[in-house]
Image (cartoon, rainbow, N blue to C red; front, side, top):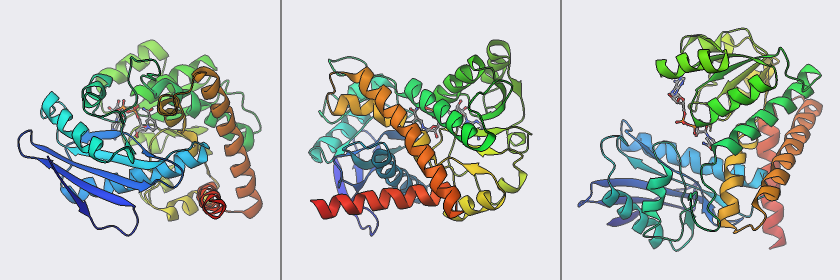
Length: 351
Ligand code: NAD
């Protein structure tokens, strides 16, 4: 297993990891350890190129710093990617080689589950390092974070609806959900239980069919989700979906969802603001997952209480951000990023 450090102006450290024996090609990006160890999931994806993977891991690790800081967790931001198809190129040996790379960082990076990884994969990685979280067993094992993420996103939608639509009561509100995966499905279930109507899309036809029969959802084509008339658009699939192509199509009042890095660029937040669409910053809304993982990393004895308090605090934080943004007449995304930067500067001065 070979590790080389790549130059970076924006991150504390970026490590390229290769292992000829197992075919491992990975990148571990440590954006910041200012608030604590850089925690963030491991994604395995058949990236088009190394540069593509590098761009993804740099964006995602920065997002983790913002997310943990917004949730008030003593954690920094990091992320890792393995280049390859998780269905055909994953092996226990490859995962163990990745685990050795994590071990070599001596706790500066803590890995967990992300797209293309299962709890069993994390357990395999954990045979090589203590710095792996999201385990299903063990005294502090936190398991799948998706249900808590879904609950946090649901709370975020209610907070944003209360702020912009005058009520957090979602009965007969229409929510367009993009992506019916671990989080999107859990969100849809909560929305239906709250009396909302849901319009959904997914690349999986089977999942769409299931949403019709199990959730009474209306389905639309992949690209149609951007132009459906609804109260809320909840991106729960991939990043970069709020961009100059999609924003002019939107016919919603609120955007709040689970996906990381929903904005292609910060200017897209301004474009949403200019259109009068309230954008609830993704790294505040989807913080439930890292809160759940944090119970394991921080060995919290009263995990349930910790999660409940942190989810409540995230709703309060979101509400403050939306209020400040209204007062300043700017996008909530700008307020949220400035608030985190300020928090981190203050902490640095206090050190
Ligand atoms: P997942 O892989 O379980 O689900 C993603 C779903 O989106 C899949 O059903 C997939 O078929 C669908 N999809 C992919 N591309 C699509 C497209 N172009 N249009 C419509 N559907 C598409 O992932 P997840 O765990 O549900 O996470 C969803 C998003 O939320 C991701 O961006 C993830 O990074 C983010 N997120 C997840 C968590 C968590 O706890 N799982 C926490 C924070 C953020």
